Image 1 (cartoon, helix red, strand yellow):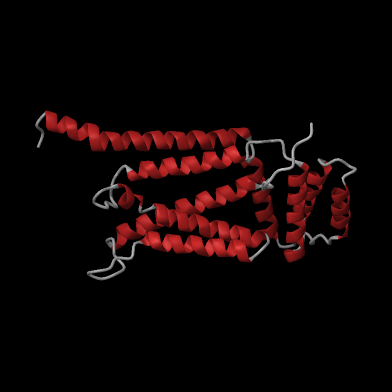
Image 2 (image 1 turned 90 degrees about the horizontal axis):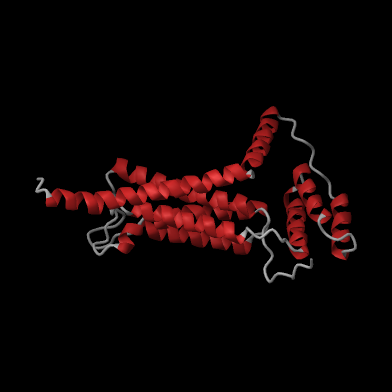
Length: 253
């Protein structure tokens, strides 16, 4: 089966970046909510002006885009992804102000809406990465990305094996794949870490990656978000619609 050449080459390790983005976004929301709660909801501004932290989130996302555009390599991509998540979380935290007439930051159903938005983002990324018919172009492009990172900061054994696995899935007569295989053989592999802490950290990372790629873990994550979303929506409907109407109907004070 010949897979057509794609217009855009997908990042095969997309899920790692998605995870970083979502964790950063959720962390931003939690930190902001806790900070505002324990500091009495301070405001930046005066009697006339109020600088909403959604503007801060927008600026953080702009910085993320600038890093994506200006720098190359894995480290810059991870940093930009973290900043994008922090910026998006800071931005979406003020969703209540955008969907209510009175700009109500404390609008209770907003947490449910944020859950839904994160679910949509997560499922959208999963759909984008669902196709298993990875083309030769995409395997080659992802191999080049590994080589590019090796030029910047060195090549470790894990990345070398990953690049080789990509090339093994390409037809042996492919000229570009042959050239990349020769280049990989010429690249110097960084020595294994001698420090016990670093070796322990590497083992934890490998175990973590083995767990997150299992179908059971992926299904559990999806189920968790679905249940959280259903719970948040149900709670919001009960507290804002059903319970007030019930109390009004029965003339409770």
